[in-house]
Each structure stands twice: as structure tokens, then as C-alpha cells.
Image 1 (cartoon, rainbow, N blue to C red):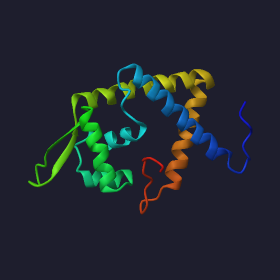
Image 2 (tube, rainbow, N blue to C red):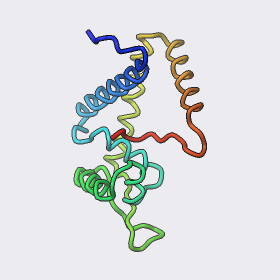
Image 3 (tube, rainbow, N blue to C red):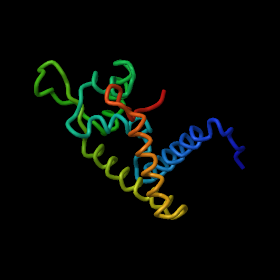
Length: 157
């Protein structure tokens, strides 16, 4: 049984544990579907490039890592057929990193798994309480984020 955290930082611990539990569950299920070579940080990269691709520099900035670290991650994901580099349409010297069909398949599977996880949690606490929890968290996030420094959803290093 888990020790009770101090009331002064219980919310932080509970949110962190919740995020970890969901992430671990997601990756267990992804592995069963043939995506055992994708890691949690890769999902943050996929989010950045899904809409229209991104350069290595944009990916590094989004993830809060060095260009070298982003390049190594891009190499890994390219070797595992999740992404590919294409000539940048506006910069002849640059490359645009985009998702392959395998990358898109991973995203679709991730979305399905997240729906399943959320439904399982709603079954535990009830649909109404789940909706209230999401509304409360949405309100908190909206309140603590300001336009001069918007919150970013990226890995915590």
C-alpha cells in the first residue's frame, strides 16, 4: 500500500502518479500491438510533427533538448520507420521531418488506447465525476496559463 503523501504536495504526487500510470499502461498496450520500440518521449515528437512536419531545430525547441539530442531521436525513429526526412519545401538546404504510415498507425493506436484507458477510469469513479475532474483540471490549466508564457505539453526532463 502506498504511503500517504504530505498534504502540502499531495496534488503534485497524485497528478504525477496518474500521468505515469497512464503512460505505462499506454506503452504496455502499444507493445502488444507491435510498437514496442516507441518510447514516451517519442509521442511528444509525434505531436509536434503530426500537423505539417517540422525541422530538427523546431523539434529540439519543442522538446526542450539540444539539436544533437533531437537529431539522435530523429535518427532512431527513422531507422524504426516512424518518420522520414523530406526536402523542405521552402528551404532547399533543410529537411522536413514527417510521419510515415507506421508513425500514423502508432498515433491512431495511441488514440484508441487513450479512449479505452479513460473509459476504464470513468468506470471506476463514474462518468459524472470523470467529467467533473476533467472540467476542474481544464479550469486550473486555463487559470495558471497566461498568454505571455503559455503552458507547453512536453516531457519533464
